[in-house]
Length: 384
Image 1 (cartoon, rainbow, N blue to C red):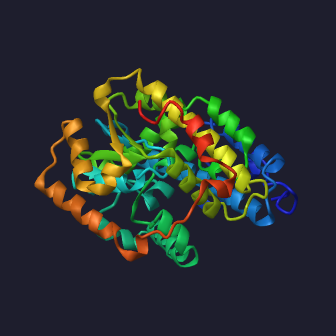
Image 2: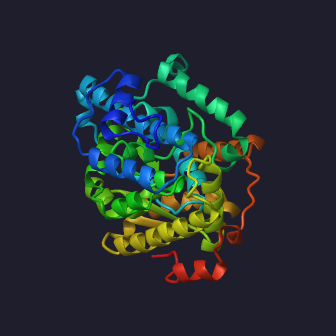
């Protein structure tokens, strides 16, 4: 790259070139990703005050997003049959960050009649192979090696949000293929990109999201999708346009606690890449982001059939996870079979292993935010 040694993360064409060099692929499909990429690059360069390591991380994140896009395009071409795969009544866990949504998502995904997106398949979309074949797959091997290293080098972060190549993960990476993802504004100070994303049309990103699900799940077409990403709260209309029979689970928790935990997670996840993303900036930007998300979700929800939505309170979920899961099945009139119950119970027991137990300490005041400010920003509550 001609700009790698300068105070820039590069140009759109240079990031595209990096993705091509990494994957050997040149087809990225439509050019609808370019606007978001250009805005993000500009925001990184002009506002984030990236450290040298931060510029390297930023390039890698953008290169990986485009690399996954190119991998998807190649797989779409190799497997045209994916277009005929039906996706019916998918479940979307749509709670704000740090509301128990990850744990709930993984319990719902444990049902043998369900499927979620494993981390390695989100990174390198392809028809999901039989599980016994994963260890021999080069894409799985690369992902497994990466997360094995992270679990050693970043044990605290991995406990706060455990990740593994074969673990069911959020579907934000599918949206990131369109350069539309909240992930960027949760690790760096990118206000121009945040403003752009707040006014962007998510329609194309969700259409691509669906194509990827059809591809990845083409060998498991009989299984219901269970998906999760905080991004969904900002895009219910686009989501419902692409998945009109979607079932939405809204997880909620006392905002004073969930926001403090969110701030702490952002601090751990930013890897000191953005000097402008200090504790005060984290508190201010994340409170703005998620209070807006709650308001937008609450407003959008009113436009749809209430039978497609169910609420799960964090306290109820922690007190009895299986009962919370069963309440979702009941609300959506889904069969909670004995096999499903056993699988969910086993998944819950595994989640209690010591390597997944977080030692997570946080306080609003550490980020320049008071409890009263949180109360004001969530004055209309977190319920619909």
